[in-house]
Length: 481
Image (cartoon, rainbow, N blue to C red):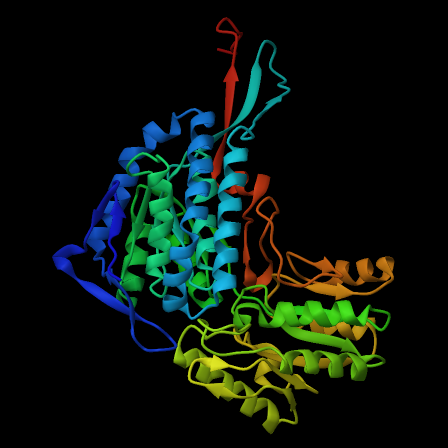
């Protein structure tokens, strides 16, 4: 399918009619032809957002809420088309893309609910006759950069709260899912969002660095949010720092799931399988280290391996649990990870096979810190099992990583589980639940090299507004001179 960009409420081509092709990772056929924006095109989107900002910032919260709710309804109605286009673009399964649409609509509705919760406060002043206030105001033009792996969820998250708070937005679409990110713009504009409030820019992969640098440097852009790899996030943070612009970053992860020796094994197995293999393990919160107390490890590993071996994989258009990885190159990386682990004494107990971009659910037992899979984020369905002697060892392994996004602990003793959870260095931790979990109203984000700042709920309002100090004073007050 051929798509356009959205700039100033208009469907536009790139300068000179330039375009690029996104190919289906399973069939190799063309999935989408998208505009290959130039820097000039990107700056036109910034100008459109800047022109729309005064009017949108002055729009009453009830009107903003109504538009966001209507956009949620529109996104729900677009679900079948997004599933079809998304399977072709990303190789993901229909259920995953359908969940993306449902959750993306929930993010819009949560943002709508927050339009009347952007509150300030009265602060007692030491100056007689003075009323001092802290009030929240929109920032201006916000740049959102979204990835392909949860394309609707993360595309909507990049724009929804910013718009709810009275900002205007330029969304730089992922090069790997341009159709889906453009569809988010359609849902918002068809719901009545004024022209220029949201703008969607698509670009060829080779132009990404120049486009992002120009967008960040644009004087009108006041805030940047990025979800993606730590490597790229570091570049974006450094570029924004040169311009003294605030950044909200949600980056890579190496989420640990700790199974203590008193855990409900069935519950832990189900959570580990879901967290490890949902969307082929291509989620920032994916379970990337399964840390098991050696006292129950044999029973747990046997049950998890049996479940993993039973998960069907293949073309996402069929009835499978695991579809394709995003590119053939991402799938080939799994081969290298498996080879390295087995060369260092790891044992493949489930999966290990690959057919093009499709990789079977794979588990490697007896993983040690000598292996690549111990430390690097696989971002695929190849997962390590690490056996530990006690709670202290479990915490040590959980924290032995540069990342700190999500984590989980399984135990029937909630005090024990909480004590372990408190020691894990992560922005998110779930007790007796999977590492993959999100709700639109929750403060979502990480620590260490998983980023900083928080999306969602009141934390999202903090991220996308500026606090101003305003006073109302006695004009006849006394001055020393």
